Image (tube, rainbow, N blue to C red; front, side, top):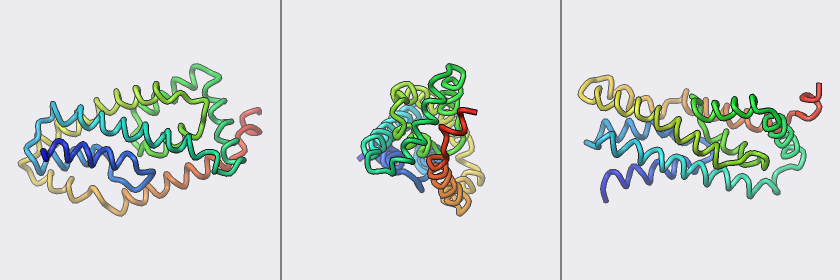
Length: 187
């Protein structure tokens, strides 16, 4: 099996996970540093795998929302309504999906729970943003491949700080759904 197929499979799997997966850029950097893969092929494969994984994740959360606490879902729907009823807020959401430096798993989980969010535009914006950011990371890693900096990047992919950030983001998603947004946003 080619290393491109392996990279695609790992990236797809990582983007299916709701938390605690390494970021896609780190997987791409790892494959760039450890294997002689061409960035022109690796980056689009990474974008397709990441976007596909996030699409499945969002649809999964959309399908399990009936098992979530009704109050939680209602709170999330209130946020969704608040965002979608104003074009400026919707643009802000799209911008967040385009440039978000944080893990996108929780963004797609939340978008999946909120039925008023159309997933296709979010996925397209996500793919466009990732095409830009992955190109930068992979090009930089390709340039640094022969240096000791590449070794530092590879060693930092599973740091305790990265795991702590993932845990905080999951807690943030839970907290977001437990706020009575309908009351707060009416003010």
